[in-house]
Image 1 (cartoon, rainbow, N blue to C red):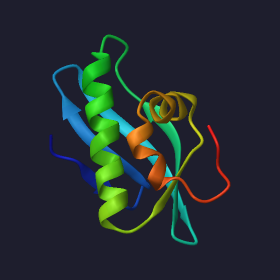
Image 2: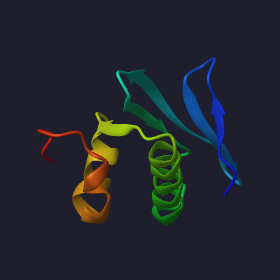
Image 3: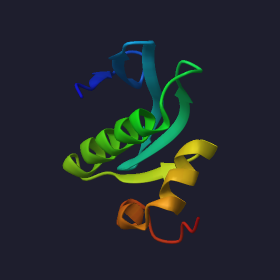
Length: 93
């Protein structure tokens, strides 16, 4: 999966067969706030999860802590405890 970091619009993007999959973000003090997830309605949940994993990989590569403010991203963190190390201290989901 190829992820484009559109820094002008502050969003990660990837093209799928059904349309554009987008994760909006904000950066503050080495923290990546994942604020919104936009995807086509019929998009497979597994593809959405792969996209979230790819975005988290980018955050880890850039040494950012991740603050999931969007409910679907927070749900992903609860279902995948292996990524909890990316959360800043004091954030519990």
